[in-house]
Image 1 (tube, helix red, strand yellow):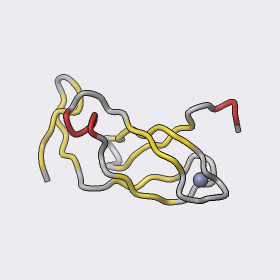
Image 2 (cartoon, helix red, strand yellow):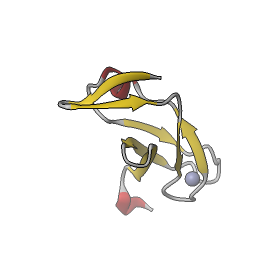
Image 3 (cartoon, helix red, strand yellow):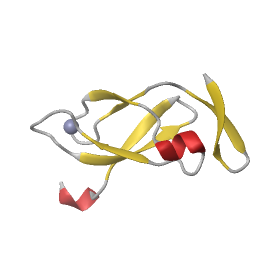
Image 4 (tube, helix red, strand yellow):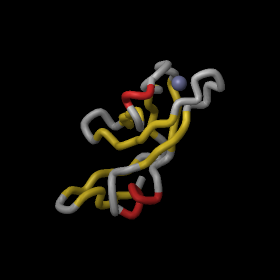
Amino acid sequence: MTTKKLAEGTEIILKETYDFNCPSCNKLMYAKPSLFMRTGMANLGGGKCIDKECNTRFTLSIDRNNERMIAELINKNEV
Ligand SMILES: [Zn+2]
């Protein structure tokens, strides 16, 4: 574990991987912190659901309280 600055004035301990649920089908997945997260530039990442029938794109951010990631649909109106 390494301590990195995630945002100005705050320090958090980044984990190797974070789990999160797909915002569309609720499938449980895992992600590593993005380059932005690791360098402390921004709490921002993204990905795509591994379920081929879902295939939803989403953004990821680390929830510091729950030590997991929050996935949000990129275009919430397009569901
Ligand atoms: Zn999904």
